[in-house]
Length: 77
Image (cartoon, rainbow, N blue to C red; front, top):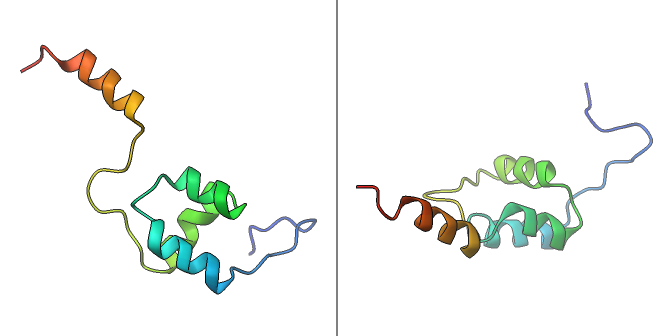
C-alpha cells in the first residue's frame, strides 16, 4: 500500500538530487538537505536509506546547541 496521498502525485528523484544526497548526507543536517531540494525530511531519510547511505559517527549539530551542552556539562567529570 502506498503512503503517498492521492492528491499529491509521486515526484521521482532526479539523478542530480540523488547525487546531492550522496555527497551531503552525513555532512550537513538532513533538514538543510531537504530544504535545498524542496523535499520533506522523511523523504530524504527514505531516499538515503534506499541508496544504502547511513550517517556514521555523531550527526552534525549547530554550534549554539554544542555550546549549550558545553555550558551545562563543563563541571561534570
